[in-house]
Image (tube, rainbow, N blue to C red; front, side):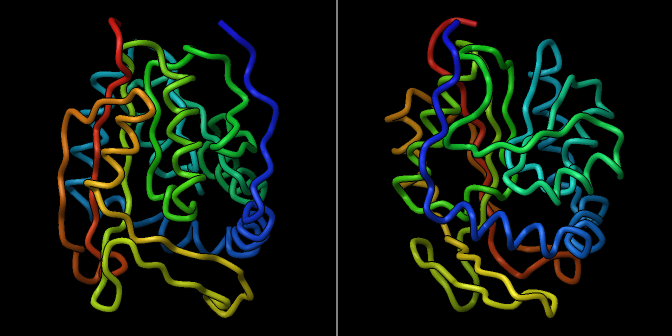
Length: 227
């Protein structure tokens, strides 16, 4: 196995990190409590746990660690990674699991070290070149035959796939965040270019009253090669 790459410059990362540090507590209280009201999400996480519990898994862009904790509860040896130190602190306090600060475009992991990688609604803050860099990192750190499960927003009543929205205020806190609405077909092509094969694709509408009213997509991918 090779050593992880040196951190790459990501111009948007400092603003994204500061923004999530600012809203970490409120995010954990609101969005971090949504999973019990999302039966399909739980089912997907359970299926992912079943195919990855035989080795180490990273929850990349883990936020307050709610999905991390769900996987751990299914017997997965999982570690959470997030760009925001504030989110990592909230996640450690809330779950007792291991969390570390990391940029998904330069993961502090050795090549081929993971059986599974979860990226749950975190890709939406990366523009296309940075997403391509993240996918290359996912392929690097996964073992041949390893799986990744990706979730992202695709559209709202006001935004179509390929468009974006910028927030300067969130829960009455100043932030500097851009949210990208992703096209599953475009992401599938980018994942394929990185050496990752999409094995399952699911789209769904929002759960009314439970979460932000956006359409969502889920891609289960496998790193090329024999496991």
